[in-house]
Image (cartoon, rainbow, N blue to C red; front, side, top):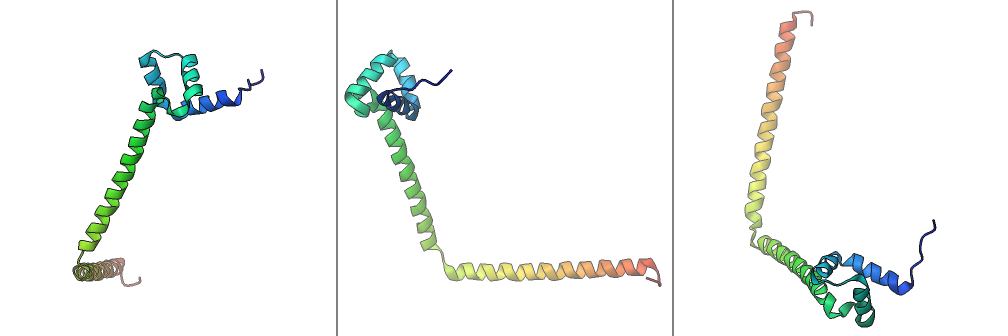
Length: 125
């Protein structure tokens, strides 16, 4: 069975409905049928009163998301501006020194383990 080729305007309506999934729930709740929905969309376009709720909520969500991202970046930049670079450098040096000490202790422990193993093996090893 070959696929049905829809008129361009019907395909546009179909794409619009797919882009607005909450619209279907709203239509069921308000008691609209597909034909009346299509007629209103065809006559008034995407900005029809029926679609305003969905479009406005999507726009508000996008704006809120952008606002949250801006706030996060502002917070990060503010925290960076408050950082004391000299203090951070001091802590990094302390951490580096601590890591070096841990490496030395680890090497000493490994060397003593190797020496103990050699002495346990006897004089020929």
